[in-house]
Image 1 (cartoon, helix red, strand yellow):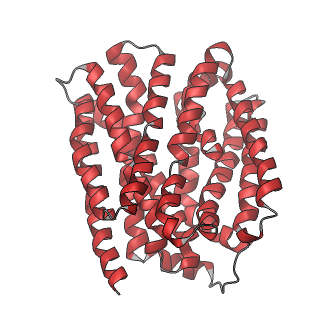
Image 2: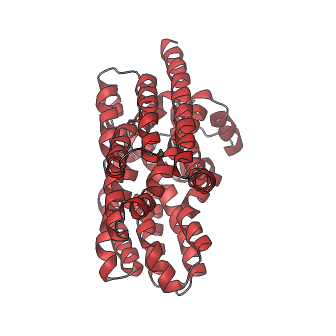
Amino acid sequence: MVAAAHVGKVPPSIPSIRDTLGASLSQAGWLLSLVNLTAAMGGMTIALTVDRFGHRRLVVLGTALCFATSLLGAFAGSIDLLLVWRFFEGLGFIIVTVSLPTLILRVTDPADRHRTMTIWSCYMPAGAGAMMLLAAVILPGTSWRSVWLVASAASLVMLIALLLRAVPRHELDAAPVSRRPILHEMAEVATSGGPLATAVCFGAYSCCWLAIVGFLPTLQVERLGFSTATAAIVTALVTAVNVGGNLLAGVLLQRGVPRGALIAGAAISMAFCAAGIFIDGVPDLWRLVLAGIYSAVIGVVPGALFAGLPVHSPRPELVGASTGLLMQGSNIGGLIGPPITGALVASGGWPAAAWLTSIALGVVAASALFLHWRERRKLAA
């Protein structure tokens, strides 16, 4: 959650950054997408590197990177220098997120894996949403530099906690395993149906999610006349309710609801909800209600997918690499979703964006059905 705060601090800060540093819209776009680009290009490679250097050691390193680069970024005198620090900050975020699932599984009883992995999956909406809300509150009286300093301070506190409480714990020690060459393990994960389908499913989910959340502030300003600060707060709240869906996935999986049915059911029903946010004829305030419902219900998708990583990884020691592939899929979806949405809106108005949400959620449902078939076959064997 602390690492995800470094992702959530950027969207509300863009206007302040543009005023202070004279950043163009293109540079602001790179500031938003640089973390996605880094993860999309090297998520699995980073994960396999983490496997070799030690997950606990790399979580500490990633947290330290977030602390240092956010602190240095707060004093950047140009947008170019800020982008450099943002790249390394994104690297720290990715290192943390691909390292932690393996550590969580080491200290979790097998019977509790569904619950713990779905709690883990809340890190992005909870951390990013909380930071977006905090940034929206403190920005009117300060500047984006204060937001960067707050994020840096949070990572410093977490770094101290890790050094004092996590580093000495022997139950986090890795069991000795024989490693194969990185390229061999990359091919093993990338050609395995389960991790690949999980990555595609999460990519389509992220594509649709960011298409809605990314343009929700614009919808509020243009259609409802909200101020920028109010729109940022509403968007942060819509992001935060996604946590409820994440946690609900763990409860339903624990009670025996099939993973595929859970994901596909949410995707198909929410396709109509997502379309209602963009199409004409829907009262404007109802669009915000639909966005909140969509965010809460569709949150079962990441919760169910993260909980399925131990099941679908080719081998237990490749859970980290499978997480890296999932992160790549998620960030590829995050990269292409907003530009496609912008192009559709520019050519056909807001209703045209409903085509993207419908197709993306259809891909989510199809991937979920494949995962259901594969999981049943694997568990039966």
